Image 1 (spheres, chains in turn purple, cyan):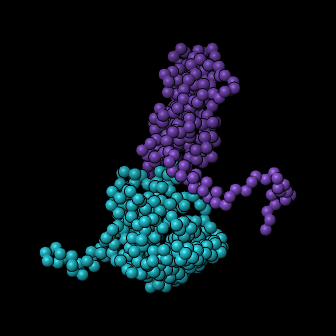
Image 2 (cartoon, chains in turn yellow, cyan; image 1 turned 135 degrees about the vertical axis):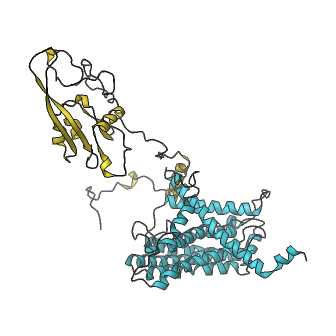
Image 3 (cartoon, chains in turn orange, blue; image 1 turned 180 degrees about the vertical axis):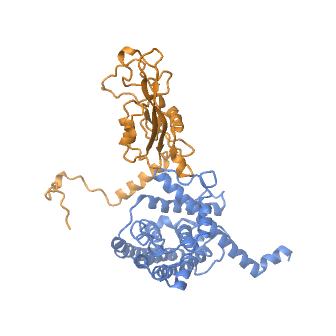
Length: 207
Length: 329
């Protein structure tokens, strides 16, 4: 029952093979390996006494920064599981400095059903306004399935646990610092996409 | 005679005391060895083992396991032979207890000093083969039957090296009594003149206990748990207890036969004999656990070949050489 290893049955000539060790030496070496491991430190992390050290881009839970959301519905549409529930309505505002009335979408309900969510991250990728962020939190198990649907208040709370983006790798192209561009939980959040017209000045938030 | 002397002279009292102590040892020593196995195997595999039960490094893990097994449902398969199925754990367990009764654990610390102690011990431990066969057949399960037949073949094959290695020691000591064998090692331990039978005895004990690398009959990854697959609850716990008690007992017997039993190494007899015996049992048990952590299991034919073509001729040759040397010296 020979197995074809693809080398055509070639064996190294007698002189080139390593010398055969004494029988039993391999057994003793095995014993020494386990003995050495006996005295070396174990690598077990004892959860829940120790929190695990997770990598920076860990996908734990999705956080929503409501100020950035323009209710474009892209995340809800792209979600493969249809687990993002959005309700909104349009309002018209007269701007303070005069001009015609602008219509603005207002977010009534934004809920992610984590019982359905498969943590693929498509919603985070697809959001053009950087309103959704990954957070490394994972301890949100509940006793009832209904409680696994997180409404927008809970999703806003998750933004306080979002980590700053990891450092760029060596050799990456340096990013030019745009005006006021920063992580969600620092003091002056602005939307990254050019919502405001260039000539209208920098607008704080999206309201 | 004083009142205490009268009590201790009473046959029934002594009997009950001995039975109590033997059963007590039988129920507690395997717990210690089982816990040691959990921790040693774990640390050899770079992990921690039980840490939660009993707060401090999981010392109560096996007690918790015992309670768990006691409160489990006792399942007997419909097609199983009820009586044989239920009696099999007892047939596997009782011989191990009986062997504890003859082993000396210290000077004047033994239950019975039989004149034919070694013979009794080896004969009784062969009875557990029947228990394994009973378990496998009565389970009405093909895998159990395969496991049981493998076990029977293996246990029979390794009885002979065990007995022959013990026979060489009996020849050296001139007696079959275990206490006599220990006393005959006052000048030098028998392992120094009989290293080969020591190795043979340890390997044959491993095979008798169905421990890795000879655990083909249990072969977790292949036939689930061999002959013991259909067992649940207390009966299953008895099989495990028999295995760990067997480790303790066979380590004790090997210490008595080869390592001088409760005798201290020369010059170090400030510690009592019982401590030395415990140290030797602990050392051999550590070796058995160490071998489990290190080696893969042997195939059935490799196992049989190792015994019939390897160990038995070696032990026979050893008896021959021992006899010749004993006559000449």
